[in-house]
Amino acid sequence: MKNIFTLIALSLIFVACQTNTPINEYLNYDSKEDKLSGGVKMIPIQTPKGVFNVWTKRVGNNPKLKVLLLHGGPGAGHDYFEAADSYFPKASIEYYYYDQLGCTRSDNPNDLDLWTIDRFVDEVEQVRQALNLSKDNFIILGHSWGGILGLEYALKYQNNLKGLIISNMVPSIPDYMKYSEEVLAPQLDPEILKQIRKFEADGDYTNQEYLDLVATHYYPKHVLRMPLDQWPNPVMRSLNSINYEMYLHMQGPSEMGVVGDATLKNWDRKADLPKITIPTLTIGAKYDTMDPKQMEWMSTQVQNGSYLYCEKGSHWSMYDDQETYFKGVIEFIQSL
Image (cartoon, rainbow, N blue to C red; front, side, top):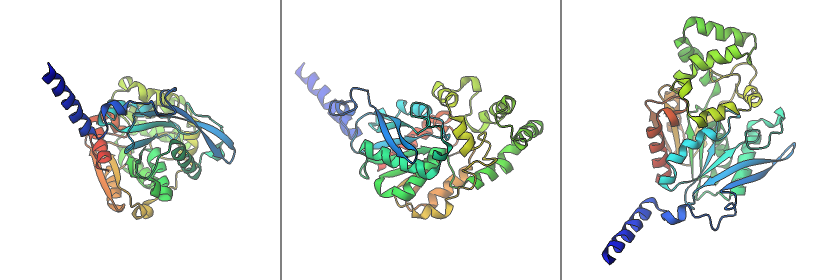
């Protein structure tokens, strides 16, 4: 019997060593100020329009690897990142859900003047400070709009980062628009595309018929390659709670490209990519709304880049090519 207990103890030690963080410590919140709330922390953010609170939630405990998840939209909220729960804990990665200002559980000042790249970058820096993240452990995983935000943050504050992951986002909105217009849109049924373009030409972006056309004919091909009625609950929660006013103001009416006077339409950081010196992973997918070849090119322009390609994936490749996505992300994080 004594030998059996010895073998069990040795096996537990071996598993703990493999993950770099002892199993009994990864879920130990005893020394954490957020223990009472299960990892949730509301962080006050200074803005030009006053102080507002943003919602964050920590999962796990690993002093060496702390990942801040920057969701897309703009305005979508953190919910669709919850697929990480099936992968990050097994790898002993500490990670933070975070609703940007104006999104779901965070305050919504409802002020268009606050929806700028620079102010969001400043918000991320305030979140970093409040969560005590540092260059020794701080990793950003930014998806879509979150990829823009992550890249912008790194260009200003990369000395605070251990690593950067830019998921499903190219470094140029004009290039994204061109890819959508010249490569993806022509793949639609010509009559459907004609109807979509008519709504856009009229500026009738909130018309339910327009939204249904895009959701039915474009999204299952390039946003998430599953039938709409099978889209996972976290994804639907993000979509159903999106701050559409923010989304329309910054991105435009849909994922078919930035149209109208959306504030992101001229964003382009291709020339600045060589300034990024920290380890950087870019993620592209075959069926994405973004050109996967440009996402691969981006990895060659930063000074310490690598590329993950999701052969089965689209814009939300953390769902439609989930194993490839999280295997590559975890390998990159653990390599740091």
